Length: 240
Image (cartoon, one colour):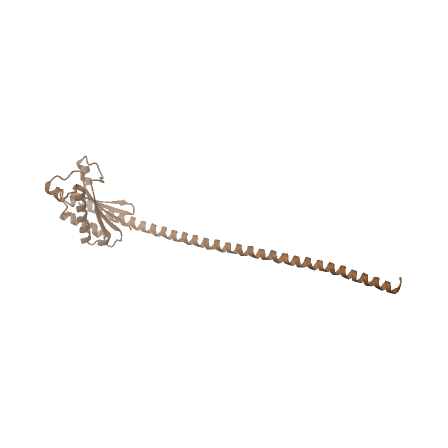
């Protein structure tokens, strides 16, 4: 083999080796680039997951804060309700004691009873009105003054309700005056009592009235005692 042939062979081997080396290097670079790309993609996906998780955590914290605020408000309302109930119970005991003392002193005919959201005075009709009449007696006015004194300065609603027994109105002059019978009479009596309470110092905007006639008896109308119990005025005192 002459020198020229040997030089060409060496050149061919050199370029072949260089090409192989270059190809191997290029493949290595491609793999590196792909690896970096894959890592970038994975990191981006992880960032998105982290952001989503952070958003869910913030939403959960916000929801928890809202729920806690609602719980706090509910507890505050419960405490306020309990305080109001305790105040009501205390005042009811005071009123019961006051009117029990009055009854012991001969001022009977008034009782105090607890009802939903408050209490009520039950006043016998005989101490307020004459038979079949709506005008208040002097003794009735004095009794209502005592009730008004107990109600002054309070914020509850005051509802006056008139009640009668089931004995029909038969006198011509009374039938003419109370054309709707006992219902009409009970309404007129409630108006008289409501007006007396206002005149005695209870704020007018707190007071309302109405009549039930014979339709809500407390006792059997078949006996004289039962009819006496049914002829009454109830003064309901309840919170708004």
